[in-house]
Length: 446
Ligand code: UDX
Image 1 (cartoon, rainbow, N blue to C red):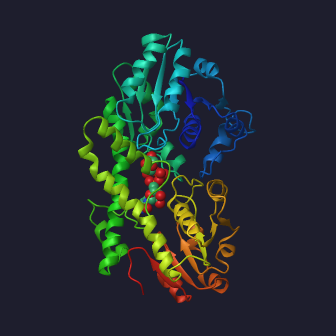
Image 2: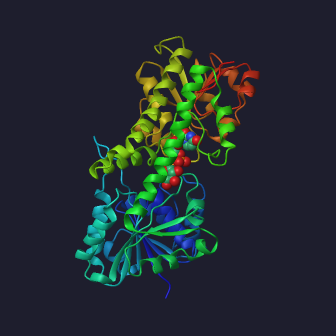
Image 3: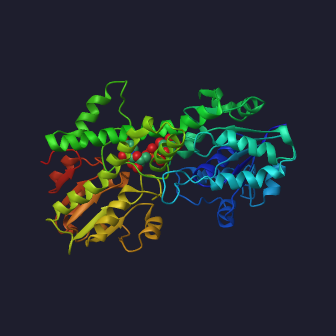
């Protein structure tokens, strides 16, 4: 009999995982504690913007015409526990208020709700990013609570999906990592992932702590790479060098590689910033804090970028924000997403606004979320409207739409044709030819 799969938590990770599991041919049931989210998903709508996800949902959600019907949603733990052979935990683990550590309460409450209802053999698979040591602790808790006793096992299977590429990353993962502690867990997960493995995804089997650490160390490495190039941008600015050229040149070395070397206003989002902080906090608890002190520097280089962007903008408008108009292109933490969590773009826009400028923001997908976080900023419906009358334009999220703007048309409506590229993603020659003063982080001024 084919395995039946459940997905607990239907945010970015869970909604994508549930749809992908249905696409792989499994019967799937998704649960969320938020009934509004479940109602949306049942209509084939996603609570967030993620390219290709809505299409995938509509191909499988039961009740939608032409769909496979393999994907259902519920808010009932009983229904979920009765249904599933494999239960994926996909709830979020945000940063705790006022400390670096991550908040495990959603993971814990999912386990406390599910485990007492597990009356038949089942595998509980954690996908959330958790502090090392959590899987072992949760495995003990599941064993204590589940009526089926030893027939219920736990495994850890970290997720590496990138927002904007979530569907592709879930259906064709560049690796599948599982943490197991004996039993049938590996065999069951090999069955779940048979298709991607047959298509070439490497399948790495590890113990619990290693699997948990793979995720946090991968994100730490990526964050370090971005902060490294941003540190080089600081040095380039001081020395008159060009960080874009430098990144291109060092990237030719295969050991370094070209990816994740785009200097700019730094990383944000729901993962990298909180994951490196939670990792430092956990290492401290384990007595290994010295090993990760470099992450403190990675974090501080990253946060410095936002302040630096604010200072460059202040300089551009003549030393004071009072009475000036600043246009901001981009609010999300990266393109192809509507996510504004810890977004460097929105943070910079907010700081400038708080210091007295009139700030108008435009973002292709992130306006509603941005307005919820920062209702006092101005919002425009198009890039052209946002820049109307601006003393300076800031390019802070590298959407394709912004690369395709016509600088000549924009120059006609601004007060001063001056642009600061916080993502090193626009073509300086094109903007300068259209009469703009173009400046970017880590590059010489023309
Ligand atoms: C990240 C990891 O990439 C993913 O594997 C993990 O599962 C979750 O966290 P995500 O948060 O979607 O994914 O974003 P990512 O593409 O990694 O970008 C993070 C931030 O870094 C963005 O703000 C982006 O703009 C910034 N960034 C990225 C740079 O500033 N420079 C770069 O060269 C690359």
